[in-house]
Length: 166
Image 1 (spheres, helix red, strand yellow):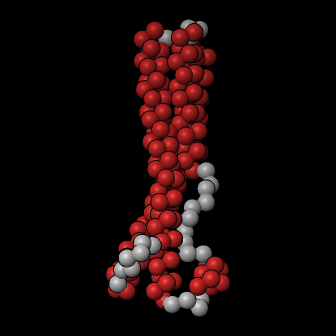
Image 2 (cartoon, rainbow, N blue to C red):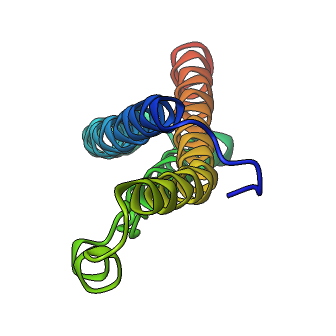
Image 3 (cartoon, rainbow, N blue to C red):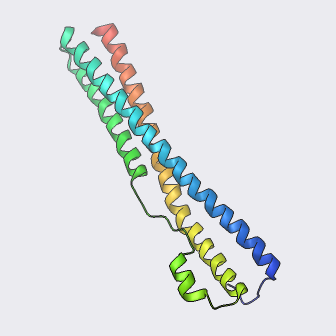
């Protein structure tokens, strides 16, 4: 920490706030993982349905190449969506300080103030490192949803063209 040492009660307040923020951050990670897995499951079901519908529709009465291409584009967009959701969900270690073993080994004989000061520093660093990972995870989930909706739009065109020109 800086050379200007905060008062003990200030350090206690800072510790509480930083710890609460880190706990909130770790809950965000869990929420994002739930969104990613839900996206994977939902898009997977939609892809299965679309594959079946496309196979049925195209085998019934159409030999027009553009319908096959539209169907294929939709499926590719959905697969890209699933890929981004999988990237968002991939297991990554997140930093959560303090490490209990190191805390006991290195700080059990130090003054409370010194220990609290180090813990606050470590919690702040944990927050900073985790924030980058959370931002990436959120962006990948947003990309997954974007490609999912693009796939739906593409498949809507397939249905429209099939209905009109099929």
